[in-house]
Image (cartoon, rainbow, N blue to C red; front, side, top):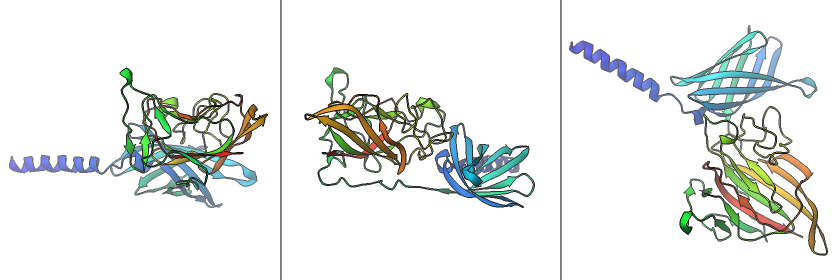
Length: 323
């Protein structure tokens, strides 16, 4: 009886250890780089591993081809034990792969080999310091240039600071105290949460509103799709980012700091803004809107940062007015 009890305890311990060793979704998700090869040769690849909830994963692989074409492979995965397993097809050929310690290895068809490693890319302007003449809307613990929406009854909200020197967007959002009517450069750093089970607009939704009232959408678009203009970097509801294939190619994984660098141009007649503003936007250093004329008329207004019920983080926001 005692020996049987020890056997049961040992089994429970082994199961608990196996479950505890399972890597969390946020460790496996992300960008990967590697190669895929067979008897004909080896080609480089880039992949996005996306957490979709309940320990499930989706892998989107892009393999550059001759003539600028791109071959695409999709794998379905599941976190198991101390890693994850993936399956899929290239035509009629089966692909099987496994994740362990930041590396995915596997086979595709007869003799085909697949290997890729998780990489972390940082936006080139991450942590950019405000240039001379810039107005810091959000920097460190200085909140003097932004206003939060008061709670019911007029109660003042407390700022919720987060790791990395940022804040969580307050309930009802926040807006700049100052108003702007001319051209400027705007730098914004943001981080969206991992909401693996959510889809579309439920994945880390927020937005950056420009003085003319146009919203540049903030969303987790890493390997996920939504309607036109609704994804990260989209001009809300009418234009998606230029760097787009199945999804936003400029987006980084959730839980990683990202950047918008926006050039906003306004024509003035007699000292007053006229016509429609023109913008160029870099998302994580990738141009997603190039000298694009907005639909909304230029006007005097402030910047606002939307609360859509998701714990999106912001930091290092500054604007440089231009003559």
